[in-house]
Image (cartoon, rainbow, N blue to C red; front, side):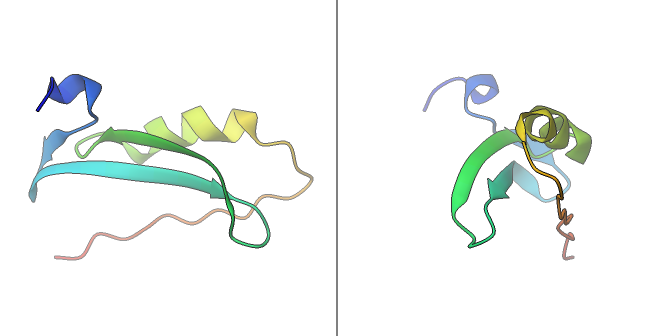
Length: 67
């Protein structure tokens, strides 16, 4: 196992975790993704992915935390 800072593993309320952010096309095919440690703010992933999107319309969704 490597250094957690290079593997996007972080400590959050539920333990060690990673947040996965994804951009998909209209058919659900993956276009790009970004990983952050579990304790990172959701805006950290959005700030990385949104500027790279070239589109007239963007639909976005924020996952919910269970528990």
